Amino acid sequence: MFAVIIPVYNNLHQNPDYRVLINSWERYCKKYNIDFLLLEGEKNNTAEICFDRWTDFTPKKSYKRILYVDGDTYVRKETPNLFEEFEKNNLRIVAIPDQGESGDYHLNQWKNFNPNWDVMTLPYFNAGFISFPIDLFLEFQKLIPKYKDYYFKNHDSKFHPVGVGVENGIRIDALDQTGVNICIQKEIGELTLLQCELNYQPVNHNNPELRIDKQVYTVDNRKKLNNLDFLNEGYIFHFGSSTVNRTNISKILDTQQI
Image 1 (cartoon, rainbow, N blue to C red):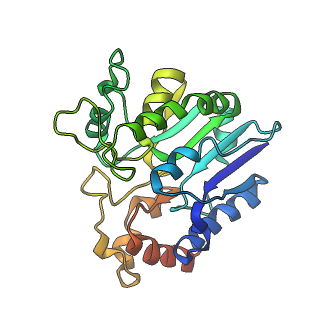
Image 2: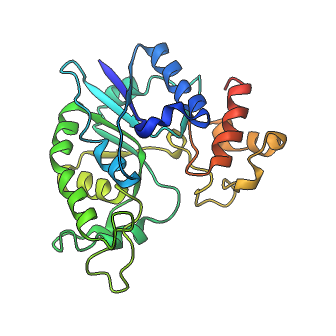
């Protein structure tokens, strides 16, 4: 049995901007008989949400594989059964490269987490789409709390953590994402990075031809939006933090029944 988990702490799923996106995953799960789970709860800040999402979930014993996705992602109707694809190809942990070219910046913030590790050579993936076989997820659950501890202990306030050993007191931003990258790659391994169409991030895309600015995300600008390779080839659209992105593009996708 498989499951898709979407963290919706602090009533995120009741926000109309996110409802269309979350509904797309519910539709997807119903199509392939996959368990669709919303991870609910109340948290004090975004960093707590991001770290605790990994440990607040208790998987059923019957689960073979799970997929965590962010609530600001939209899955297209024709997306194949990714669980079957991952299993057929004997993949273990699956993620998608982050498309914002910020990996070196963020990894540098964590370079003193374990001075014996060379984290600067790691590829950097986005934490908004990660699939685990259940055995490795349970292992990951045991490891990730120490990364949360590091994040919150090295701070000037609970909302603005800063890195220990970084000369200018630079913030450890990217929330849990860098810790997740290091944990999976340095302590677990068995990671496969797949194509960006499974977690397409056009606002942050490092290819200028595929990058699209916030101001073009309007219903009246469908032509440029339709030219994105996401709408031609991709499967999962990751909006990011912009309310304009979520509101306008989600309306376009839902209206066109993509």
